[in-house]
Image 1 (cartoon, rainbow, N blue to C red):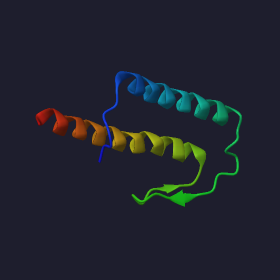
Image 2: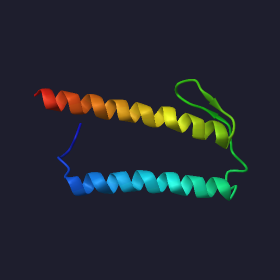
Image 3: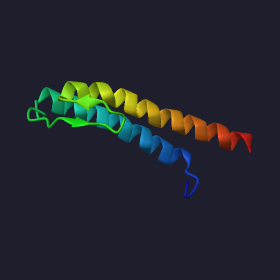
Image 4: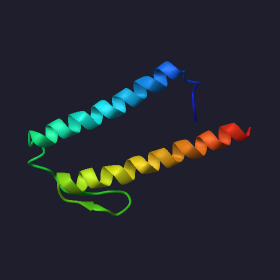
Length: 79
């Protein structure tokens, strides 16, 4: 449940944070800081054994968030 409306400045800040997080992930991957990656299973039953599998799953996971955001946006626009 949204707690408040956000303005364009906050939306822009969120976009920048998202992109900078990807840049940081790329840098960390290049620096091999995930060498001792601990395997785990997601709530969707996906086994993730290494950082490459985790990065692949990240796109799916973020897609879920994007779908929910789009759905919420449509509901708000219909009211």
